[in-house]
Image (tube, rainbow, N blue to C red):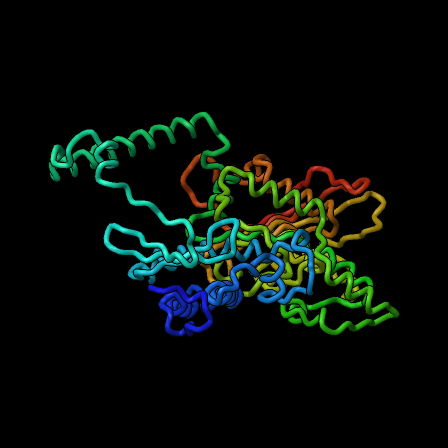
Length: 440
């Protein structure tokens, strides 16, 4: 079939374009407008002969409404969504699109879609968008690779042989796993292992979200808190409102930046390196790029308080230990909504405390749909958040707090922990649990 790199051929008549429209209308894409727009845009450009314009900056400007000539080195939104798009396409063809005879993929390192037509025992590449065609070995090459004639192994014998090989592989794999776990106690059924095993799985994305430090600076400049409704839609960056004298142009500059703290980035990197992490199902995403559906469909790991990530408001209703860090709303404190005997209902935080005492919380909660989980690490300061992050990742403190869940097959329940620290010169001591609640 003739390609449609020429604008003389309408897109509507091309089966490749019709495939893209079916994919964009599928449940996995219709609830992800950014991924749908991404896929439709790069396909339209390619099929219209404009694939040479498909680069990170162009996609960022056209699809994600980034400012002209923005620097992709400081903003990885295109790369992160391209990774999600590749996964979502694979899920489509593994599921409802399994019967499609035409397939599309976006290879790593490129934003140009590749189409392949599936025929019995053959994959036919479309030359207009895939210059490198897959080769099919000739009969002579197959005979050279396989010294036995095809009839030398009967079909029934082939089935038995394949079954025997699979059984052997399964046995060896099981024994190897048992031996590996026996020599690696950190991967056994400890509380820490169970936590991260529930946060990472092959069937779901896990999104790690560092705090938005630019938002904190903006708040100080404009003199008021930025609520989730304005933050999620980006309205706060469209019209600068100052409750005290400020330079609107300077505020707009700060709002356009994507700053976060080193402690949050260190936490994100540490989480990606824990043994249970699944790299190709894990993404580090800036808070500004989250969507509400992420709280329903994905596993989320959030760092920082609501002042630096308004998305915390989405899950704060589920929390028992609630961090109140808005000084305009009253004294800084941690609210204990359901105090147990011996606990306080309120734990005040004084940033000017002479003993440098800090507070932090760790929450392990279900996501909004109950299909996944959320870990929230919060502190009133960077040091507090860092201490809480260390507590939940070091494989020691969490196990000591929940020994009943180590060495057995019991599932780790959802929980919340209130921690205290001592902060000196911006560094926090080892966090000590003040109170903790486990969900029934």
